[in-house]
Length: 365
Image (cartoon, rainbow, N blue to C red; front, side, top):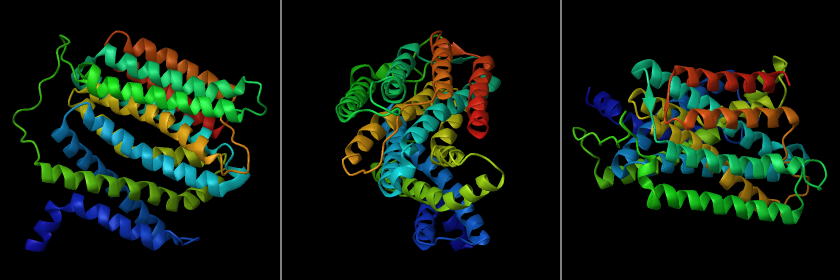
């Protein structure tokens, strides 16, 4: 009974450790049996929930917007490491991997996470409010990064939707500069722009009834969050051959595997954003969604640019015409959503329709 009570109380600490053990056992297995695939999937789901729990503990300790920034950066750093590893080891077959993964992350965050957060929040609270100054700054930075890194290569003089070495170096430095300026704005210069607001536009006061975790508890959660996120990305990679086989069996394009893996990697942020929306803290949801999109571009492209020194094959970053149309439509709709500083379930539905269009066109291009 005591052991059961201990396990129940500490399940969020135990699951990441179990996930790392499962990851170590399955990492080098080329063909995983069906039973093992199911076990990995169950452990992956539990690890995602554990990651969300530890992210919320840290967010409660450090406050907003630092909490959402920590989760977004932690997920993206691990995601970048995975992408760089696959690009370096994949050769010419991985030429479009970085582009496809970053674009999928942008569409999932800007339409999927934003859409479901707005819809959940509006269904529960009728009208949701957020700070247009902070959300607008997020959107402007994400748009600049996306166009510079994913659209511009299609129209430069370099062949086959690629950057020349000098162009790639410039875009990498520009991405880091934009991301660095935004983080300084979010955490220091105009931190109040990124805090949840009431209907009158005033910052939401923190919940005084909920006791903040101790410094020791927050540090333990930070370590366990990193362990959980490493396990999530690693287990997603372990599952990828099974996912690829399933995608091939039902006749979907091979590129759809990247969409599924991106969905798995972004699950912690998605759950955290929806929980914040249910509590009428839409600004936190937008911080998570758009912050993740920004980090995906602002950290991935410089890392890929550095890795390209060791790459022998081409590095295709430019989007195709269909993808460009979806991206530009997403930007226009996002501007109209963010500008008023409040939204209804309609705006959430519009973003989810765009997300559905992205998924459908990924399946049937």
